[in-house]
Length: 449
Image 1 (cartoon, one colour):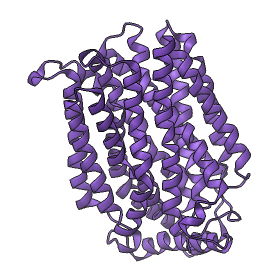
Image 2: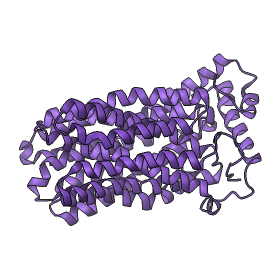
Image 3: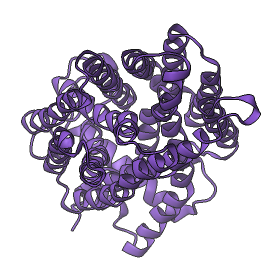
Image 4: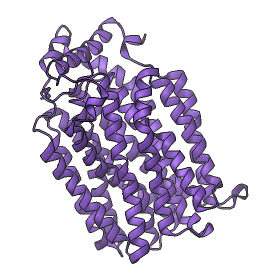
């Protein structure tokens, strides 16, 4: 059974289990669909360059090294602007912040269709990262306004499924759009960027009209439902503050070693998801697969990953154990990525290894954010989440840069992938050694009060 901290239990003890579950079911179905769809669109726009490169490397005469650097520069822009974006979200609200992020990243994604030089490629990828910065940590912060700690792994898993669902939807879609080469007088990769950038702009407008800020302000929860949701969050906040260190501002978060340990581990999470999204299409192309089939083969592992994310997140909430769920997922992913060279000439071996790797990295993402959220609180939460996420974004730069450079220098894509696999395993070890056996407890909380 899920262990419920005493303060939260007392806050909802006046209500039946059915009432509690009904309240959270209503919250889940109200806010989760929109942010999942938004993450699907965001992730497609982030990694569709992995499909576009199958054509524009030839059309624009770019090398694998140019592609790798440009793909990675997205995460430099992302890293630099995440903390300011999340701190701004806490001040102006999620609706305005997420609307701004979606519209701007959609327009820049469309603009990617008109690059012609390496410099333009580098600038646009950097700007795309800067525009999207704050979306993922912003949503993590936003979810903490609605769901207490014992429910967060499954909720984060449901949200993070958007990234895996993006692989299921975006991979065949991108493969099909590439096949439209010549339509409107454009190359297939240009059509891909334009058609996949437009939904973000439209979704941003819809978000402004639809999204609610916090449970205290909504009209679609009745009095008892609002009391359940607000009471649980208030009890959790008070309990965390009681066991917190005496400091509580963002400057104190900057001196917390646990925050940096989590950030270093998160580098590997982003490196893993980026590696699979950016290089899986290349693996299949090297086997002589056509563009439309590459999309299907690349998307298939994400189907199993979605199931794995939900099961791992649910089991983590049920047992209230976080570290080993994360570490085992990352270890399985790391070993699979290292072994990809074994399937160099076999589609089915490659598919099997990519499936295990996808399950591992995406399941680790579902569990990861429950760990820092357990000891970040109040005003420290927004900056702490963004700091971890921004440092972790280095993984998105490291991954394509290393793989692209090694591939150009040695001609072997698999040596670069093996280096990323080792990073994933190292991440599992770091988190096990740096975080106590009960990160859900309050003894290491960083309070924002």
